[in-house]
Amino acid sequence: MKVLIDANVLYPTVMREVVLGVAAAGIFTPQWSDRLLEEWARAAARLGPEGEAQARGEIAMLSARWPGANVKYPPELEHRLWLPDPADIHVLAAAISGSSDIIMTSNAKDFPRHILAEEGLSRADPDGFLLGCFEAQPVAVRGAAKSVLSEARRLSGDDWQMRSLMKKARLPRLGKALERLP
Image 1: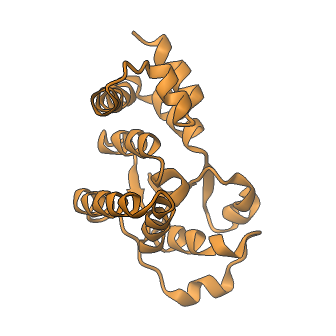
Image 2: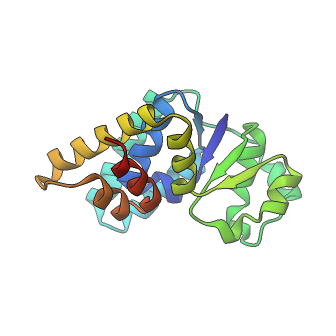
């Protein structure tokens, strides 16, 4: 299953790391476009020059780790598409061009299901998608989440608990499910 990941899922670090950890476990194939990666870098720039520099470094590492994930599309594809927010049409164009199955986004209102269905696509929010992955393959998802938890503890020096870290990352249902599994 191919999943095009929107910038609003790529930019929050913990969310991105959990999503890509699950992808690394072989549960789905991640996709994005140059424009989505650029949106991530520009969002990080609001934190200052260090934020943008860090994002660009992370994008370079991400691109090296997932060389086949970057989707290219002909610009004219955007001209035949419509979404409530014209600024999101590039996401739909990338998903179509990449033969994606799902667009993973935290922005449901701008990706109406009926419009996506016309293109053979569906939409998933990160928490619901990851919860579904957890229900299908709990060991793999738990492993990815535990790895992110360990790194969050190492980097912050705080004793994060799984549920609170996932809640902070806007993955509350996944956090609750992970808490139940020993």
